[in-house]
Image 1 (cartoon, rainbow, N blue to C red):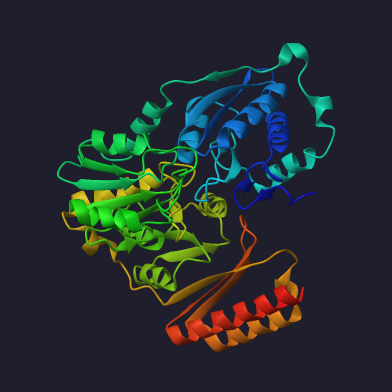
Image 2: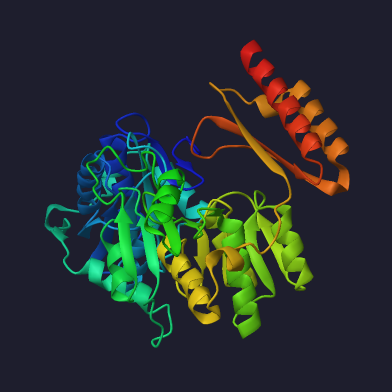
Length: 450
């Protein structure tokens, strides 16, 4: 059943429906625990979650499976995904588990796994775990005297806050900055405002009252309108929007304009390039990043390396080619000098560092390039493989021909939802809109016929 569980970012789906049931979560715990038995020492797991209601169910199921495999489980409670990646290494754990569906609504949930090095698991390891889920895994579990224990761990928030603060120079203070931070009623609702305040900023925190149902609900990085309004209201210098598990960030400047992941990468890459810190002569992003970013980097004689969508693939390319800045347009920014995965708070701190060093407003610093007109539309599908149908293939080929070398076309199935994503960009916005609409129409007709 390979491929039926893991997607582009772990396992994700509707809570209490396949594959996000308590039974499967328990079996994932068993399989992951058995996969990381490395010698005779007591094996340990750090397990965090965001604030959605189903986290209680998935957490307890995972604990049962991990303990059955002989793993001791350190329960972290609600905490950002990058904190789990950091604590795997800090606590010398064998596995890290984050229970989160990231930016999805509360009724979804997911399981993200990290190896002992703090990196998300490779496709090969995920396939090995997946292959165990439908077998008689119970035969390999621990004996009665080898079962694991579970305990809550105190002080993990403080560890992560100190880690985040240390990514800035010791002498740097954020005093004089008024910052609005939108925590999406998610995993960073405690740590992000506290870290910014300890660094000296005046902090206005919004969406910091999670109730199990309001995570990402009309707030956070995918719904920044509330943050834009608050920035205007309190005359803030900057707004910071995190998502439910705080591994992505979107910035709002002092005028309320949105700064996406492409512009954030451009700002950090330019700053690090000028200071001699940028490694590998470029930046890693995905096929979804704007052509304007590629041109901006090219003007500095830097290269944009593109990968398929998913921050895991960005990180893999960064590691393989020695680059230290990467990310996605959506706001997953990976700064490998500090972290092994996307970290919204740490990325925001680097933006704040640029503001403090240069003494200029966000609106002047963050508009590094004029984005090439880009349009993305999603087509919901009920099943099947519409991209393999002849009419869809023909429409895609025709669109590529019409765009020529002055544009790009990216069409892909979503890794987290039953959608086909159709994106085009080019210097002619009318042409971009026309080719996207034509492809969407053909996919919709194929879907209806099926």
